[in-house]
Length: 287
Image 1: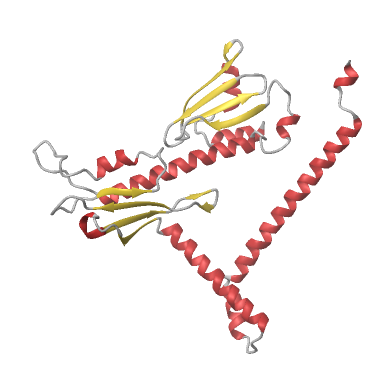
Image 2: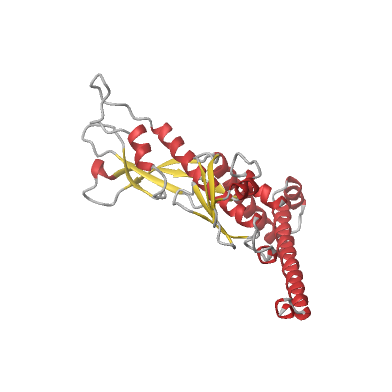
Protein backbone atom coordinates (compact mmCIF):
# COMPACT_ATOMS: atom_id res chain seq x y z
CA UNK A 1 0.00 0.00 0.00
CA UNK A 2 2.82 2.39 0.89
CA UNK A 3 4.70 1.48 -2.28
CA UNK A 4 1.72 2.54 -4.44
CA UNK A 5 1.64 6.01 -2.85
CA UNK A 6 5.38 6.65 -3.14
CA UNK A 7 6.48 8.23 -6.43
CA UNK A 8 8.43 5.99 -8.79
CA UNK A 9 12.07 6.79 -9.63
CA UNK A 10 11.15 7.25 -13.31
CA UNK A 11 8.57 9.94 -12.52
CA UNK A 12 10.95 11.67 -10.15
CA UNK A 13 13.66 11.85 -12.83
CA UNK A 14 11.11 13.06 -15.39
CA UNK A 15 9.98 15.82 -13.06
CA UNK A 16 13.57 16.90 -12.47
CA UNK A 17 14.24 17.02 -16.21
CA UNK A 18 11.04 18.98 -16.75
CA UNK A 19 12.04 21.51 -14.10
CA UNK A 20 15.53 21.83 -15.57
CA UNK A 21 14.13 22.44 -19.06
CA UNK A 22 11.72 25.05 -17.68
CA UNK A 23 14.60 26.84 -15.93
CA UNK A 24 16.70 26.83 -19.12
CA UNK A 25 13.80 28.23 -21.14
CA UNK A 26 13.29 30.96 -18.55
CA UNK A 27 17.00 31.81 -18.73
CA UNK A 28 16.84 31.97 -22.54
CA UNK A 29 13.88 34.35 -22.42
CA UNK A 30 15.65 36.49 -19.83
CA UNK A 31 18.79 36.65 -22.00
CA UNK A 32 16.71 37.61 -25.05
CA UNK A 33 15.11 40.44 -23.09
CA UNK A 34 18.55 41.59 -21.92
CA UNK A 35 19.81 41.62 -25.52
CA UNK A 36 16.81 43.70 -26.62
CA UNK A 37 17.35 46.13 -23.75
CA UNK A 38 21.08 46.50 -24.41
CA UNK A 39 20.45 46.94 -28.14
CA UNK A 40 17.89 49.67 -27.49
CA UNK A 41 20.30 51.40 -25.08
CA UNK A 42 23.15 51.34 -27.59
CA UNK A 43 20.95 52.56 -30.44
CA UNK A 44 19.89 55.67 -28.51
CA UNK A 45 23.31 56.51 -27.06
CA UNK A 46 25.05 59.72 -28.14
CA UNK A 47 28.23 57.79 -28.95
CA UNK A 48 26.32 55.68 -31.46
CA UNK A 49 24.96 58.80 -33.14
CA UNK A 50 28.43 60.33 -33.33
CA UNK A 51 29.85 57.16 -34.88
CA UNK A 52 27.11 57.05 -37.49
CA UNK A 53 27.62 60.72 -38.35
CA UNK A 54 31.38 60.31 -38.63
CA UNK A 55 31.05 57.54 -41.20
CA UNK A 56 31.61 58.97 -44.69
CA UNK A 57 30.71 55.84 -46.61
CA UNK A 58 27.06 55.11 -47.20
CA UNK A 59 26.07 51.49 -47.52
CA UNK A 60 23.05 49.35 -46.98
CA UNK A 61 24.20 48.37 -43.50
CA UNK A 62 24.67 52.01 -42.48
CA UNK A 63 21.26 52.94 -43.83
CA UNK A 64 19.69 50.18 -41.75
CA UNK A 65 21.53 51.38 -38.65
CA UNK A 66 20.47 54.98 -39.22
CA UNK A 67 16.85 53.93 -39.75
CA UNK A 68 16.97 51.80 -36.60
CA UNK A 69 18.56 54.66 -34.65
CA UNK A 70 15.87 57.13 -35.73
CA UNK A 71 13.11 54.63 -34.97
CA UNK A 72 14.47 53.90 -31.50
CA UNK A 73 14.99 57.60 -30.76
CA UNK A 74 11.39 58.34 -31.74
CA UNK A 75 10.18 55.49 -29.50
CA UNK A 76 12.27 56.79 -26.60
CA UNK A 77 10.88 60.29 -27.05
CA UNK A 78 7.33 58.93 -27.16
CA UNK A 79 7.84 56.93 -23.94
CA UNK A 80 9.34 59.98 -22.24
CA UNK A 81 6.38 62.09 -23.29
CA UNK A 82 3.87 59.49 -22.10
CA UNK A 83 5.67 59.16 -18.76
CA UNK A 84 5.85 62.91 -18.12
CA UNK A 85 2.58 64.10 -19.71
CA UNK A 86 0.24 61.59 -18.09
CA UNK A 87 -2.86 63.69 -18.81
CA UNK A 88 -3.32 65.40 -22.17
CA UNK A 89 -6.22 67.20 -23.82
CA UNK A 90 -7.32 67.34 -27.44
CA UNK A 91 -10.28 68.58 -29.45
CA UNK A 92 -12.46 66.47 -31.74
CA UNK A 93 -15.69 67.03 -33.65
CA UNK A 94 -18.75 64.85 -33.14
CA UNK A 95 -19.92 63.72 -36.62
CA UNK A 96 -23.53 63.57 -35.43
CA UNK A 97 -25.38 66.42 -37.19
CA UNK A 98 -27.61 66.81 -34.13
CA UNK A 99 -24.74 66.98 -31.66
CA UNK A 100 -24.85 69.71 -29.02
CA UNK A 101 -22.55 72.73 -29.11
CA UNK A 102 -21.91 72.29 -32.83
CA UNK A 103 -20.25 68.93 -32.26
CA UNK A 104 -17.34 70.37 -30.28
CA UNK A 105 -15.89 67.75 -27.92
CA UNK A 106 -13.00 68.06 -25.49
CA UNK A 107 -11.04 64.85 -25.00
CA UNK A 108 -8.92 63.81 -22.01
CA UNK A 109 -6.27 61.11 -22.46
CA UNK A 110 -4.92 59.30 -19.37
CA UNK A 111 -1.64 57.38 -19.42
CA UNK A 112 -1.11 54.66 -16.83
CA UNK A 113 1.89 52.37 -16.39
CA UNK A 114 1.60 48.92 -14.86
CA UNK A 115 4.32 46.25 -14.52
CA UNK A 116 6.86 48.53 -16.24
CA UNK A 117 4.63 48.85 -19.32
CA UNK A 118 2.13 51.39 -20.56
CA UNK A 119 -1.41 50.07 -20.62
CA UNK A 120 -3.91 51.15 -23.25
CA UNK A 121 -4.76 54.83 -22.66
CA UNK A 122 -8.11 55.76 -21.16
CA UNK A 123 -10.24 58.47 -22.77
CA UNK A 124 -12.96 60.75 -21.43
CA UNK A 125 -14.95 62.92 -23.85
CA UNK A 126 -16.62 66.09 -22.56
CA UNK A 127 -19.14 68.39 -24.23
CA UNK A 128 -21.24 71.46 -23.34
CA UNK A 129 -24.92 70.49 -23.50
CA UNK A 130 -26.17 73.53 -21.58
CA UNK A 131 -27.29 76.45 -23.72
CA UNK A 132 -25.26 79.65 -23.30
CA UNK A 133 -23.19 78.06 -20.53
CA UNK A 134 -19.64 76.79 -20.43
CA UNK A 135 -20.39 73.90 -18.07
CA UNK A 136 -18.90 70.56 -19.15
CA UNK A 137 -20.49 67.13 -18.97
CA UNK A 138 -19.08 63.64 -19.51
CA UNK A 139 -20.19 62.56 -22.98
CA UNK A 140 -18.32 59.28 -23.60
CA UNK A 141 -15.51 57.43 -21.85
CA UNK A 142 -13.46 54.22 -21.84
CA UNK A 143 -12.91 54.13 -18.07
CA UNK A 144 -13.62 50.76 -16.35
CA UNK A 145 -16.97 50.49 -14.63
CA UNK A 146 -15.31 49.90 -11.26
CA UNK A 147 -13.89 53.44 -11.29
CA UNK A 148 -16.33 55.95 -9.65
CA UNK A 149 -16.39 58.25 -12.66
CA UNK A 150 -19.93 59.52 -12.05
CA UNK A 151 -19.10 60.41 -8.45
CA UNK A 152 -15.96 62.30 -9.47
CA UNK A 153 -17.91 64.15 -12.15
CA UNK A 154 -20.64 65.10 -9.69
CA UNK A 155 -18.02 66.43 -7.27
CA UNK A 156 -15.73 68.32 -9.65
CA UNK A 157 -17.97 68.91 -12.71
CA UNK A 158 -21.40 69.73 -11.20
CA UNK A 159 -24.23 70.78 -13.48
CA UNK A 160 -25.67 74.33 -13.35
CA UNK A 161 -28.64 72.97 -11.38
CA UNK A 162 -26.33 72.06 -8.47
CA UNK A 163 -26.14 75.16 -6.28
CA UNK A 164 -24.44 76.20 -3.07
CA UNK A 165 -26.15 77.32 0.12
CA UNK A 166 -26.35 80.90 -1.17
CA UNK A 167 -28.29 79.72 -4.24
CA UNK A 168 -25.36 80.25 -6.64
CA UNK A 169 -24.26 77.60 -9.17
CA UNK A 170 -21.29 75.54 -8.15
CA UNK A 171 -18.05 76.03 -10.06
CA UNK A 172 -16.46 73.29 -12.10
CA UNK A 173 -12.79 72.32 -11.71
CA UNK A 174 -11.57 70.33 -14.70
CA UNK A 175 -7.99 70.00 -13.48
CA UNK A 176 -9.05 68.48 -10.16
CA UNK A 177 -11.40 66.11 -11.97
CA UNK A 178 -8.59 64.91 -14.24
CA UNK A 179 -6.11 64.47 -11.37
CA UNK A 180 -8.64 62.62 -9.20
CA UNK A 181 -9.64 60.31 -12.05
CA UNK A 182 -6.06 59.40 -12.91
CA UNK A 183 -5.34 58.74 -9.24
CA UNK A 184 -8.22 56.26 -9.16
CA UNK A 185 -6.94 54.58 -12.35
CA UNK A 186 -3.43 54.23 -10.94
CA UNK A 187 -4.77 52.84 -7.66
CA UNK A 188 -6.85 50.26 -9.52
CA UNK A 189 -3.92 49.03 -11.60
CA UNK A 190 -1.64 48.93 -8.55
CA UNK A 191 -4.14 46.76 -6.68
CA UNK A 192 -4.52 44.42 -9.65
CA UNK A 193 -0.72 44.18 -10.03
CA UNK A 194 -0.30 43.25 -6.36
CA UNK A 195 -2.68 40.32 -6.81
CA UNK A 196 -0.49 39.08 -9.65
CA UNK A 197 2.59 39.47 -7.45
CA UNK A 198 0.88 37.36 -4.78
CA UNK A 199 0.22 34.60 -7.30
CA UNK A 200 3.84 34.50 -8.40
CA UNK A 201 5.10 34.62 -4.81
CA UNK A 202 2.81 31.71 -3.89
CA UNK A 203 4.15 29.69 -6.82
CA UNK A 204 0.85 29.45 -8.67
CA UNK A 205 2.57 30.06 -12.03
CA UNK A 206 5.09 27.25 -11.54
CA UNK A 207 5.40 23.76 -10.08
CA UNK A 208 6.18 25.16 -6.64
CA UNK A 209 2.58 24.74 -5.45
CA UNK A 210 2.56 21.07 -6.47
CA UNK A 211 5.68 20.36 -4.44
CA UNK A 212 4.35 21.92 -1.22
CA UNK A 213 2.70 20.01 1.59
CA UNK A 214 -1.08 19.61 1.06
CA UNK A 215 -2.01 21.19 4.40
CA UNK A 216 -0.14 24.43 3.73
CA UNK A 217 -0.23 25.02 -0.04
CA UNK A 218 -2.26 27.80 -1.65
CA UNK A 219 -4.15 26.80 -4.76
CA UNK A 220 -5.78 30.07 -5.83
CA UNK A 221 -5.49 33.83 -5.32
CA UNK A 222 -7.99 36.00 -7.19
CA UNK A 223 -9.75 39.34 -6.95
CA UNK A 224 -13.11 38.95 -5.22
CA UNK A 225 -14.65 42.18 -6.56
CA UNK A 226 -14.41 44.36 -9.64
CA UNK A 227 -12.45 47.09 -7.83
CA UNK A 228 -9.78 44.57 -6.75
CA UNK A 229 -10.09 45.77 -3.14
CA UNK A 230 -10.89 42.28 -1.87
CA UNK A 231 -8.68 39.25 -2.46
CA UNK A 232 -9.89 35.66 -2.21
CA UNK A 233 -7.36 33.00 -1.12
CA UNK A 234 -8.01 29.26 -1.34
CA UNK A 235 -5.95 26.52 0.31
CA UNK A 236 -5.75 22.92 -0.86
CA UNK A 237 -7.19 21.57 2.40
CA UNK A 238 -10.41 23.57 1.95
CA UNK A 239 -9.57 26.69 3.93
CA UNK A 240 -10.68 29.96 2.36
CA UNK A 241 -9.69 33.51 3.19
CA UNK A 242 -10.66 37.04 2.30
CA UNK A 243 -8.28 40.02 2.47
CA UNK A 244 -9.76 43.52 2.37
CA UNK A 245 -7.71 46.64 1.59
CA UNK A 246 -8.54 50.29 1.07
CA UNK A 247 -7.95 52.43 -2.02
CA UNK A 248 -4.27 52.97 -1.21
CA UNK A 249 -3.43 49.31 -0.53
CA UNK A 250 -3.50 49.36 3.27
CA UNK A 251 -4.74 46.09 4.75
CA UNK A 252 -8.01 46.67 6.58
CA UNK A 253 -8.87 43.12 7.60
CA UNK A 254 -8.26 39.47 6.75
CA UNK A 255 -10.32 36.45 7.74
CA UNK A 256 -9.59 32.76 7.11
CA UNK A 257 -12.28 30.12 7.61
CA UNK A 258 -11.41 26.47 8.23
CA UNK A 259 -13.18 23.37 9.46
CA UNK A 260 -13.00 24.66 13.03
CA UNK A 261 -14.12 28.22 12.25
CA UNK A 262 -11.84 31.23 12.02
CA UNK A 263 -8.16 30.37 11.64
CA UNK A 264 -6.23 33.29 13.12
CA UNK A 265 -2.92 31.43 13.00
CA UNK A 266 -3.14 31.12 9.21
CA UNK A 267 -3.85 34.85 9.02
CA UNK A 268 -0.69 35.60 11.00
CA UNK A 269 1.38 33.23 8.86
CA UNK A 270 0.00 34.67 5.60
CA UNK A 271 0.45 38.33 6.49
CA UNK A 272 3.62 38.03 8.52
CA UNK A 273 2.94 41.37 10.18
CA UNK A 274 2.41 43.19 6.87
CA UNK A 275 0.50 46.46 7.04
CA UNK A 276 0.32 47.16 3.32
CA UNK A 277 -0.74 44.63 0.73
CA UNK A 278 2.45 44.98 -1.35
CA UNK A 279 4.43 43.62 1.62
CA UNK A 280 2.57 40.30 1.50
CA UNK A 281 4.28 38.98 -1.68
CA UNK A 282 7.70 39.66 -0.16
CA UNK A 283 6.70 37.65 2.91
CA UNK A 284 5.38 34.79 0.77
CA UNK A 285 8.62 34.62 -1.21
CA UNK A 286 10.64 34.24 1.98
CA UNK A 287 8.41 31.43 3.22
